[in-house]
Image 1 (cartoon, one colour):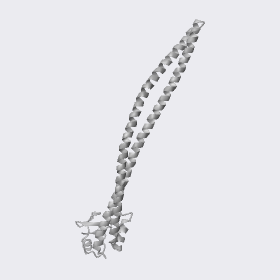
Image 2 (cartoon, rainbow, N blue to C red):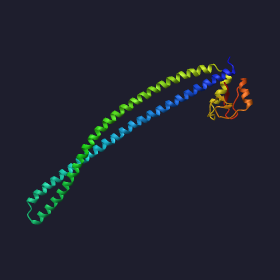
Image 3 (spheres, rainbow, N blue to C red):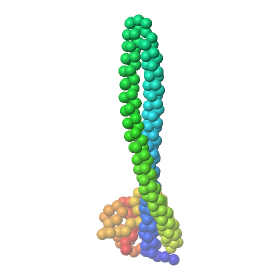
Image 4 (cartoon, rainbow, N blue to C red):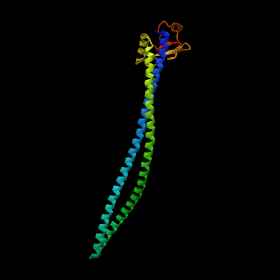
Length: 238
């Protein structure tokens, strides 16, 4: 059977183990969040790349439409050229000639538009290839980082199992009465502080309040569990 002082010593160890578990769990959570962010980075780059490819395909489709439009205008120009040669009056000749002139102007504009599209498509094609290579390299780096992070998570989970064994052994060395008081405070939703605090310089190390001399004397006797008047945590003086 353990003494109250031994119980309190084990409770301090138990609390430290539980804090250690909590810190490990927070670290695991943060790592999962980081992995999620890295996957989002990959998804965003792939999404941007898909948009780039779609824009390229749309531009290429538009170019083909313009080329068809140019082909049709050239056919009309050829048709009017034949009619021009067969014109039987000066008025008809001038009208046909005017139409040909307008069509040739449109043709010239279309050719310029198509040429600019070809330049842009050529540039976009090179950009797509470079972007694809960059994304592949980026994914390799990020996936390797994720792999290392996942490896670290496995290590941390192993650490949790180890610490849980320490907690189990520690709890087995504490009397039911002391353990019940600790768990009562530890499980309280209102208690945001530690469940057991070491007295430092006559003050509660949890809330910082200066303890009454009577409280200090009660703690030193180890006859019963003493609580802080301010934060209600279990007090222990080494």
